[in-house]
Image (cartoon, rainbow, N blue to C red; front, side, top):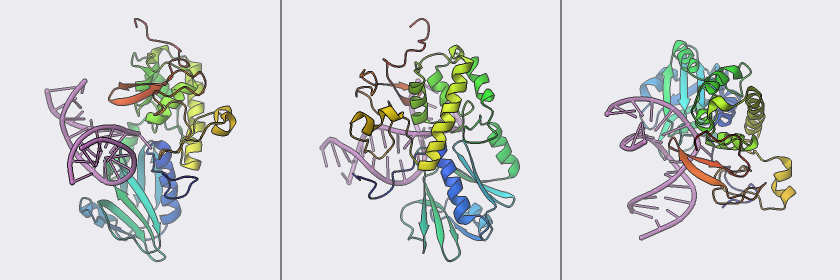
Length: 288
DNA sequence: TGTCCATGATCAA
DNA sequence: TGATCCTGGACAT
């Protein structure tokens, strides 16, 4: 256990804010510089060779997808559940473990090592357009149109908790943000999407933007309001690898910070869902 | 040393 | 809905 920020940084949390942070770091380290590209693991070799020696023109994120542009060739990365990207200054570190793709600048060296991604592939600009067209609005992007998400929510009988995990509704939202967002807005996760009011979605969207921007700045998902922070409540800070201060995510069985009800957990569409039955009462699905 | 689980998503049925 | 993929950390044995 690392305490007080000593030791390795917390593991990346691949919700949307993580990818935006990574895009910024690629930009800072590599943009405009000639790079060397390799695939030590051997699963991206041919594609990697086409990149080798080129300059990085642009790095950007859309939802949980990362796009690195080298002229007309674009590397698309999706970290999935297990993917990680580690950056190193100085000499490239020895290759240990399964590195799918390594990108390095000339001296002074800067290296990015990608492991365990769900996707690492070379796309054309047209293919990138097709991919992003399938994504909903990303709260971290200035071009995002929350109405596109709303149109899917308002006509759906699917539980709002499941809709929030749908990348066509809000690209970049993952299991932590969805649980915390529903908590902050006191919404029963099983409420049908069509029962959400327009004003509620507006408020949730604005909140998501704020929470995720904080995530980009800090690399953490912190969702508790000032009055519920550890210092304000006189409680110990959260010290697990996930790092952030949250209301319900992975707090099953513990008392709600606000009403003391036991935080609940259930499986929904194959993912763990956390919520407070005391605070989140708006509005249970009819017939239950 | 082995098993399970995770901040994700796709595919087949 | 269930199986599957990826890696690594936590935990059990």
